[in-house]
Image (cartoon, rainbow, N blue to C red):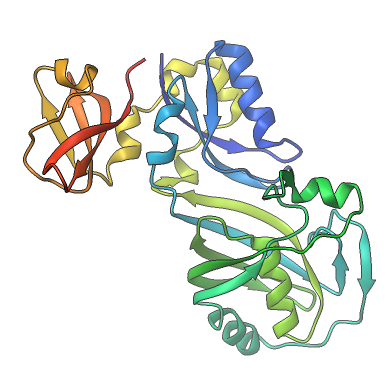
Length: 281
C-alpha cells in the first residue's frame, strides 16, 4: 500500500500530528510536503510508504486565503501570539487596500519570522524564539503571483494569494498592514491549493483513516509535470545502468506496468540517462 493522500487539516493540529496519526494506523513510513501551522487549515499533501518521491513533486506554488486583523502586533505575527503593541486603526478604503495588495505582485524579499522552522546554526528559529534568544533573521526571495481582495470591513481584510513555496503569509500580512499605515496580525489561514492539489479534493483525517486504501492517489498524479517514459524491461533500472532513451527532458519518470518506477536524469557528458531516484519499495 502506497500513494498520496490529500488531507484537509483541521485547526489545533500540527502537520506532524497528522503524519503521526497515519503512521500509527498504517505502521508505514509517512511524510508531508509542507508544514501548516497548528491554527491553519486546508491542503496537506501526505505520502504513504513512498517518501522517496517527496522532492520530485511539484510544490513550487501554493494558494492561501488569509485574514488580516488590524490594530495589534504580536511576537508571532498572528493573533495567537503575545501582544507586543496595540494601536488605533488608521482608516482605509477598499481602493487603497486593492492598490497595496497589488503592489506585492512580483519578486520581492521577506524576513523569515522567528516562529518558523527554518534552521540557523543547527537550530530552528522557533527554538531561539522559545528561549528568548536574539538572532539575525534571514532574508529570503519570494514571489507573489497573484493577490486578490475577498472581503473587507473596518478592522480586517480577507484575501487570496498565490505565492512561491517557502513564502510566509504571516509576514506578508505584517507588510500589508505597514503599507496601510497600520499594524496587524494574521487572524486566519486556509491553504486552498498546494501544487496541483486543491482543497476540494481533500478529505478530513478521520475520513481517510476510516478507509485509507480508497483515498490513496497514485504517485504518478504528483509527477505529471515531468515527462513519462514507459518501459517493458526494468532490469537496467534496477541495476543502475546507463539508459539509452530518447531525450524527453532533463528529468523524467520511468513507468513500468503502469507504476512509477524511477526518476531519471539526463547526463550531458554521456548523452544518456541515469537513475536519479528509485521509487520501488
